[in-house]
Image (cartoon, rainbow, N blue to C red; front, side):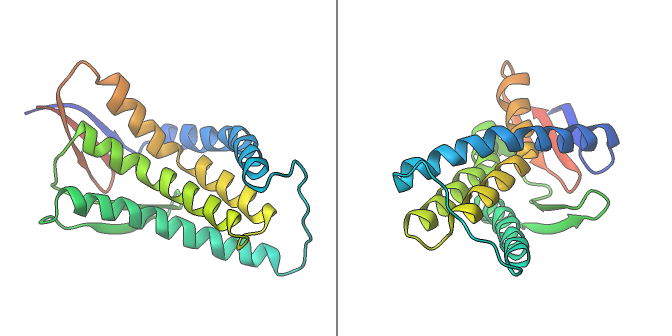
Length: 185
């Protein structure tokens, strides 16, 4: 196998800055997307919400839960495709990034695309379901769903690299603690 590309998110400062900037910029389109979904689900174009002193703490707590769930979903799909291999979870403290990885495991392009997109899809659907059931207030839904989706830019970047940049190659992908290794199969 030939190594085509190695993406190192841990040590590439420019990539970290670019992904953080992309997340900041992506927040606003996702805000409009989830505002639209809110209107569609509730049938109301109006958003009514109250605010109390506990809201920021509760939102921060829920955001942490969503981030842990996000990495857990990656882990579930790593295991689903390679049940015999280990999954590892961690934090890159200098960029405050949580991660799930399965070092040494090689995945097909299709498997990695599913692994990469699953948390965005599952968490977006889960938050929308909680809104539809009336268990999640409008502001919480819009803020948490938009922030989570914007935080998925690293996954979206991986999807771009795998689906577009290396579209002409048959590839195998290793997810590492530092990022991705993409091999020509």
